[in-house]
Image: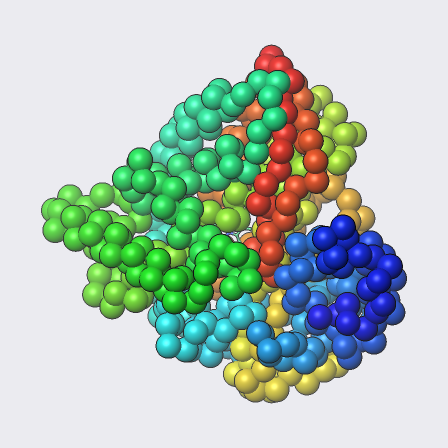
Length: 434
Ligand code: HEM
């Protein structure tokens, strides 16, 4: 932990823990760079990582960290353009699960979940093609009406003039309903999807799962559940338009082994869940912190599509993606060695003000707002990016039609993770309806 190098006594919280947010800048600039280990979930939970990344971008944009016993040594790539280079040089920077996969924490060697986000060419491309029709323009058009109906249902049921948790009542509920629609999943059991997504990405210390064994047991339940759905759909002569039917009937996926099916299911659940969920909360939070931007938006709702991109940049729902070098590679004057772990910190690249002007600010009418790294680049660029944007656009259109104000009542509780950058709880109150 980086805080070992500073005197923590001055910043003790009432429960005796260290307040990482207080004096984050002073700490970030006083710790020697060779002791830096930014992949510390506590920093992210405290929202205290920003000055560390700022310093890395300025002083050591491609930085080697010794890491800790959890994640081992890794390179941090923190500038926008260097991240683009790594993300688009997939011949050198592998996503392969067997080399560790796509997050800083390696896949467990004895429980590898193969999924196409963690595969290289050519298998990646073939599997990606199988699920791509779900987000074709035609299918998005078909989904738009269903999404709007569900958004309206959720917003109309919100309590007025009474505090409630936006994360649970809106962000989770909406994304879960969306996923249940994409999978044609049994409606009443849809919160199972949320649970499986949460445990798939949870750190062992997060408190969400008791042990690695417990996580595996739940993921195997997920596999059993989805296997039943597969079996029900695989023999239908008229395949459905849902993701499970696409996998069960797709030439590249119909014979995949059970763990590969589980891996791809988890990929689609996590892909469509955490990310959109945290953009929904992050957007409301960003507007509450920037009333002048909210005023602009309310004066001109035509800014919504642009604001959606700005929310996704500002929030950066997945803080990083990781690769493994297949050969030695020179980047920004450093030699990354074959076998090294390379972390692309999207969360930092999105705040690189040599590329994005006033990058720390949230600006609803920012020019080129879609020029962000949150969806990645290259062969793994997010499959669901247009779907996510559409969902967020509809939510904001419907919010503006209904609620003149949504008050954020306290600082949100953030997720303990260096991968999923998001919120566990955000209490709000809606004073009145239009
Ligand atoms: C891949 C972010 C929404 C499905 C990715 C990647 C990122 C990402 C960073 C990896 C890119 C790379 O390695 O270069 C996001 C964000 C979202 C979002 C920020 C919302 C704001 C969705 C949705 C779905 C989805 C709604 C599906 C329903 C996927 C899939 C991949 C992926 C399947 C793997 C693509 C591949 O490996 O070829 N996403 N995502 N995502 N995303 Fe998303």
